[in-house]
Image (cartoon, rainbow, N blue to C red):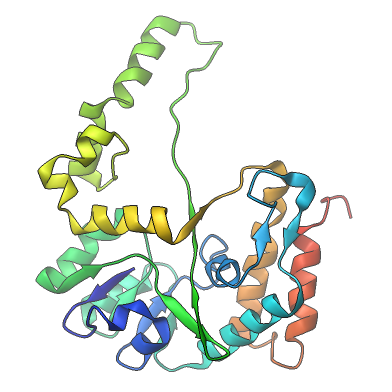
Length: 258
């Protein structure tokens, strides 16, 4: 989460609803990689620990319906804006938005907009039925592989080794704000003290779950996106929140053949 330090204090950024009392917050609401953060925080699960495909998805019951009802009210909050097509950064630039959720890839653009007022932190809590609930992001990583059918396997392996090396990771960090995973680099003074690195590592360590990579996960993206769009356009309401939430859960557990 990136935010304007001149608007929000370090205490403010601990809770989303507190932030909404002080400034406009943007969130990629219809993006199914982000929206589950609210549901996962309230006890919804995907494939057990993320690796048990037979466990299925549990975005059902009152725990999930309560989140849907919260999100309906959230979208109605005048200080909440749905981020679409870069509108979050544009809003930070013109002052109409004071905080947004995105990845390290947008850090340079945000820094240009906020300057020394740029703050970055791991995910906040939100207040559901009078209690604070921690938001949880998906955590993931990239892997470098070599095509087993390569005509030049030796050169391909050499390239892969270099791309995963400490030297290449540092260049990715310096040029594109891609946070390194090399432990020696993470201990380097300039990287270890970087507010962006600290925030991303805190997110990974404390406010995230590993994104499941089981094949059934492919059935989860569209139902969540559709629910987000339904809340945005008003077709999902408090009156049908339970029905719509269960429909999302059913679709996420579909075998894809129906």
